[in-house]
Length: 143
Image (tube, rainbow, N blue to C red; front, side, top):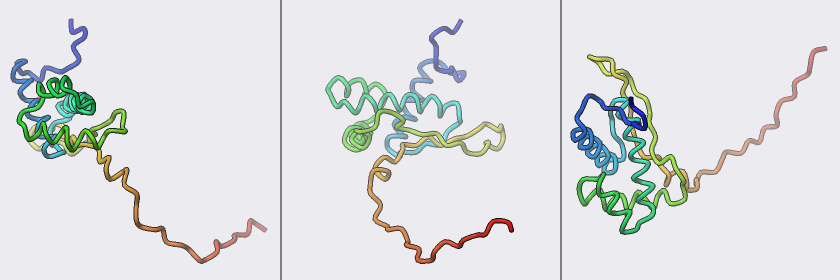
């Protein structure tokens, strides 16, 4: 029975699975976008949201917890200095998954996992809407 086992096995050993998701998460943090299969993307999104939520706390304990999932000092620094402050006012949904086409060869459904662009959404727009000077045309109802 698989009670309380949420993750898929992906036909990998637990060490290989842990290593794969650590590398994918590090790539997601450094590049802010990863291309993978749909099922791996679902798991990566779940892990990434938890890690970013922990990074928002910016305590010693949070830094040590995040080090379990991220490989390399560069990714660790980018997460705490750049990505976590970007999502400070957001309570969840730090990543999104966009479906792509089916892969040629085995028809596996592919997707992009990327960080939501919180900075662009929060920035005010500088463009002013165009004003219309023409009055709306009146239409006569049936006679």
